[in-house]
Length: 162
Image 1 (tube, rainbow, N blue to C red):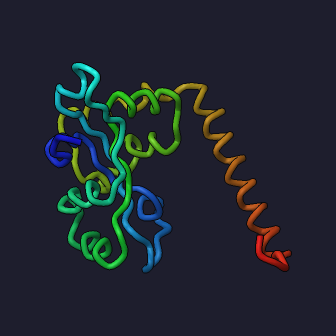
Image 2: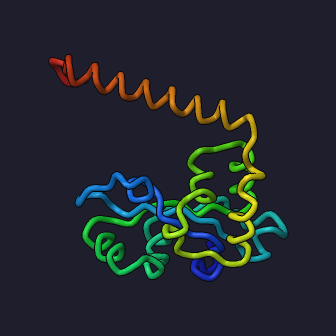
């Protein structure tokens, strides 16, 4: 990645347990964002960028957290993803629940919002369609299966290592 993520991020929000109001004292800080890379990433084929989630890159965005969040991030960790705007729009149009969080989060969870970011949030309803019903439904079913598997393991733990 040959551009400054801080300068190119158009929307950055708090995500995860803190966004849902279910965080505990041990919860880390999760963020999600959208960026518009430099023109070199759109012209030619040598540069490619879809998203960044490396801690070293994500940590450059720590400066936009409120002081309490910065302290928690120092004590635990800061993690998340920042998506290239075309990938973000494509995932949002598909009704991806993890992506739609950025558009529908509470205003107080927004840490960066440029005019482009504001435009995305103002038009968030354009990304909703009947497809969301199936996307969210499929996500809910997969989470239920995970819970059931975990419950089986808790009720009947294995007697030997796999």
